Amino acid sequence: MILVNIPFMQIIAKCPFCGFSWLLDEIAADRRTRCRNCNKLFKVPPLEDVPEAKKVIDKAKGTCYVDESGKTFG
Image (cartoon, rainbow, N blue to C red; front, top):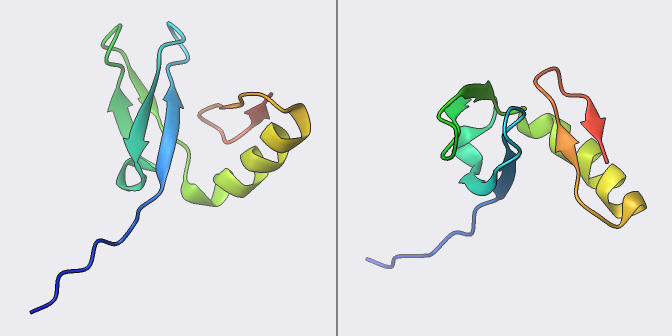
């Protein structure tokens, strides 16, 4: 048996309540997660919204926030 390490995407999560950021595995996309800092729940956008967010990040040359409805802010 050969085991292969398959790379996975990580999502930068940013709490809309306290602003704390951390990395989540792609399996967290389109689900609710609890902030590691303030313990409040918020929804992680679906992976389909990631390409649009990446465009905003590339254009802004900085970080980007995607809210619960999928709107991107750079």
